[in-house]
Length: 172
Image (cartoon, rainbow, N blue to C red; front, side, top):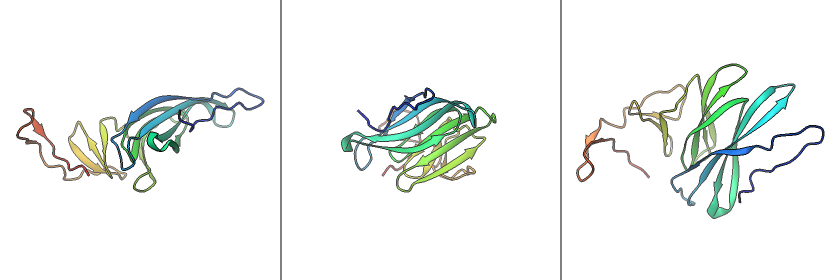
């Protein structure tokens, strides 16, 4: 069992300990398989309001370790995509009515990139530092604002595979 989440009770009022609501199994990295989880808990706080807050963590079963990656503000969240070194999370803020997508990267470097007013639901992550928009068939760097790259090239036929056009992307 993952020991990354501690359930506790604070004297004076009842707290929601939270629950794991989404999980993604990533392609094995250098250390083996990795699982990415998004947890969610409901809070009541007179200073910041009422609503759900989310946390993101990853778990390496082979190493028997889990690590906290980031936290999201009041509102709704959804784990869009995850790779062995990063995750893409969409959030809608209850208090402002704004949406944003956040890239949290923990390998090869730790960084957070926020895309305000962007719902990148059609995007997936390519290691180590690119997005791919599956609807527009375009690649992007992990940078805000979004700027399309010239790669990958136009779709091509791949001999020996199911008929169709393919984008060829070198995976390391």
